Length: 174
Picture 1 (cartoon, rainbow, N blue to C red):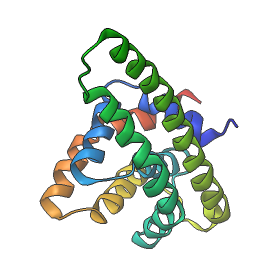
Picture 2: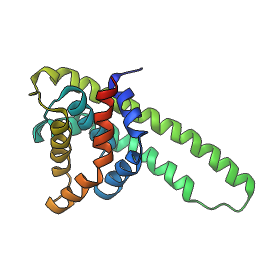
Picture 3: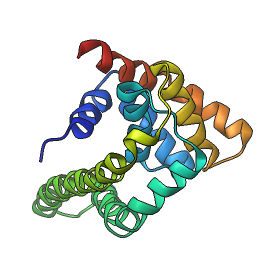
Picture 4: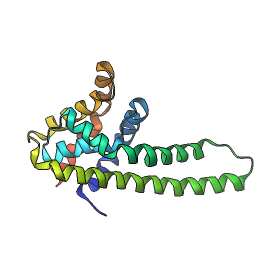
C-alpha cells in the first residue's frame, strides 16, 4: 500500500543525515522513529500542532505492534550483524538471513505506519493548523518531552535539525 505518510517518510529518512539522527533518537531515548516521522509529517504537510495527549494516543495506538513486532525484528537483525561465525558458509547464510529479516522489519514499519495513518485520518480535521516549521519543531518537542528530561530534550531537538529541514523540503517539493 502506497500512502502519503509512507512516501514522505521514505523521502525524509533518505535525506542527508536524517537516518543517523532518527537512529540516534531511537537508540539514545527509545523513541519510535515512526512517531518522529509522524510528527514531522503532520507538521510539515498539514501544519498540524499536536498535544501531549495526541502523542500519547498515537503511542498507544501503535505501541503493541511496535513493542511486540518491530522491536524484536530489529533486535534479531542487529544480533545477526554482530555474531561472528567460524565458517564462511555460516557467515554467508547469516548475512542472507539478515537481509531477509531487514526486509520483514521494513514491512513491519510500514504496517505500523498504516496504523498511524488510520489514527491520523480520524483526527486530522480537529488539529489547529499553523506554520509548517513551527508545527514540525513543536510536534517533535512534544514527542521528545514524553521520552526524557529537559536537557535531553534540547539535545535531541538539536539532533533532529536535518530531519526538520528534510521534512520542510518535502512540502516545498510538492
